[in-house]
Image 1 (cartoon, one colour):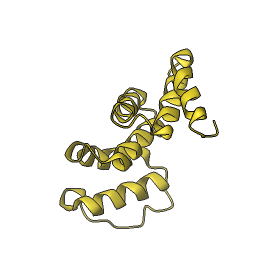
Image 2 (tube, rainbow, N blue to C red):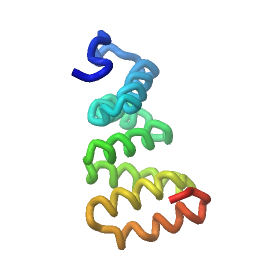
Image 3 (cartoon, rainbow, N blue to C red):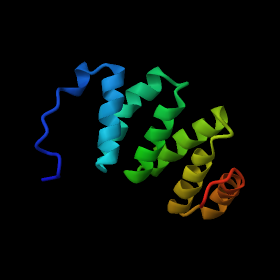
Image 4 (tube, rainbow, N blue to C red):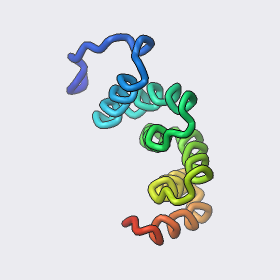
Length: 118
């Protein structure tokens, strides 16, 4: 039983977007990454221009070891917002974790050039 299993939350289907994002953030912060991704997927589809949702979704996928979806979302973010340094770092780490470090090296260098500690 996890630390927060005692908390009773309403059914996810009836949440408005703000409540859904809050719940996803809570899930991410409590390391329930799969749940966070599940909550964020409909938000990302409904609001493709919301970079915060997309980045949290990519991070959730990464931490849930869903590397394929993490890579896709990170690449989508970079395509839409090429100056999003954290997306470059996340893509580099995802590719490293997938055994494709050489492919991720370029994104790691970009993240470093944008001032991120890698």
